[in-house]
Amino acid sequence: MGRHSKHILLIDDEDDIREVAAMSLETVAGWRVTCARSCAEGVKLAEDATPDAILLDVMMPDQDGPQTLRLLRQNAKTKSIPVLFLTAKVQPVERQRLKDIGASGTLAKPFDPMKLADEIAQTLGW
Amino acid sequence: MKRTVEKTVLTGFIIVLALLGMVGVVSQRTIHGLIDDSQWVNHTHEVLELLQRVSFQITQAEASVRGFVITANSGFESQYALDRSGIEPLLSELKVKTSDNPSEQAKLLQLDSIVRERFAGLDDAIQTRKVGGLPAVLALSRNNRGLILSARITTVIGEMRNEENGLLAERNQRERESSRRAFFVVLFAVMLGMTAVLASVFLAFRDLTRRREVDRLKSEFVSVVSHELRTPLTSIYGSLGLLSSGLLGSEKGKRMLEIAVNNTDRLIRLLNDILDIEKLESGATQLSRTLCDAGDLIRRSAELMKAMAEEHKVTIQVSEAKATIDADCDRILQCLTNLLSNAIKFSDPGSQVWIKAAVVGDDAQFEVADRGRGIPTEKRESIFERFQQVDASDSRRKSGTGLGLAITRSIVLQHGGRIWVTGELGKGSSFCFTIPLATTPQDSGDLLKPPLVGMSKGENGKAF
Image (cartoon, rainbow over all chains, first blue to last red; front, side, top):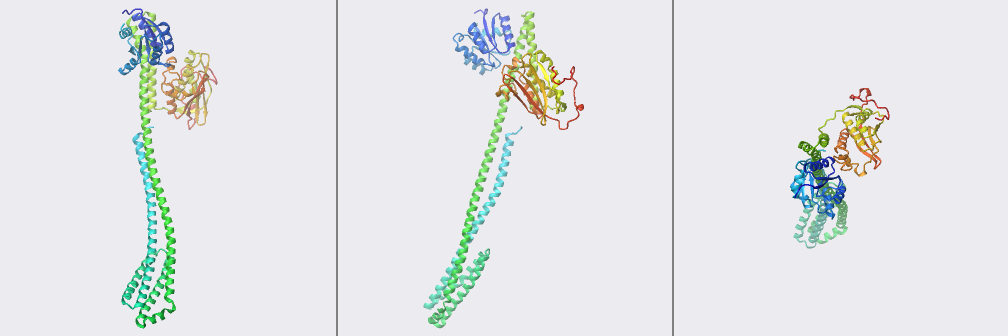
């Protein structure tokens, strides 16, 4: 499957991380990126834009990653969009826990901006 | 507080031993008293028995004499000799046993002489029977002397028995009281011992819980710190990685560099604050105390924060104050600038923040107030803990490290002061802390005032 014209929704409360990750995906892979700074904003954007995949931060102040994933899974419009977590905790136990609640994969923070798109594509089998 | 479980257990053990020792002494005395009282009860029983035996011995002797008088059988005579010889030891034993009681001794003397007289009469009867036969004895007994003596003996012995019975009642009562006392002393001892053991166990358990809590907080801190460090690192790594790829144009490249620089700065501040709080809380930081003027400190802190205030379009109102404290001036300045920085960050453009100092009791009380959003009542304690902002996203939006208030509190506590926050939600907050006044106030001319470049002396209420 081609890697062009993918649309990613990025949900992270850190302004700079959002900006860097978006620039990485746009510049390196040529993907389109939509950004959200909170769970609520992310769920709404996911409904409206139906992206190809969602990159989700685990630790966020209002509602954290797993809670956001639950909301996305409960929503008919968003339940089939693959979700990848961005997390500092990359121990196998944690990865398995996120997989168990329905994540398609886990990407480690800090990430290599040149390989981020590749990692997403590989994880999702694109 | 560095109390260990071992210390607690040892202290508890020593207290238990001391208490048990004391209780042991009291118990020993009480039980001795009880034994003493029991011995007195036994003693009285012995005296009563002796009196009974004296009475019986005399009755026996009289019976033997009657037998001889009637039958002239020498068997009765030898029985009488036996009865007679038995009375003397009984009387001397009685004398010994009642030696503690003068009234019984007097009665015993009386009894002794009557008994002797009675036996003399009985001896007489035996002799008279042998010489003059039965009629002579009958003639002899006509004066009723024997009967009178017998009655007197019975009376005296009765009186002595009454006295002993009275004593017995008294001693029984005392023995019962001693028993009760001994029971309560021992009960008290057991309860005291149990309480001490339970208290030791409780203290040891509490210490263990506390230690576990410290361990938990430590690992939580490590986990939070690792997350806090990783966040700026992610931005730095990402932006520099993109820059080095050469894929970015100059505009995007400049923005990535900016992100890298900003996050490097954040990382440095975070590391500095982490090191600072660790040093402060582990006690590794020594305060270099000098006499300093509170008014001077608030003016200098306002001067230091002037640029930031201007950037946020906020003015700082400084009140005049006069108080001398013996403190680490740089550290107090650090507290004041921390609080001012928060006040400015959480104030709307165009608003004011206030900094004051006043003498309250034996302390100088500093206050930094703003008209920002305020702090909810339930967060007024936790706000001083590490990484505990009112809103978890504060540190990101307001670019703090999340350690400023924890550092401020630690400094204030090291100076022997207190720190707290008041205010109303939505209407602003007021952070106050106290530092004890210097005990020997000196002329302000002696105060140490490190020069501050470009500092202008603030007038009362002057806005920087």
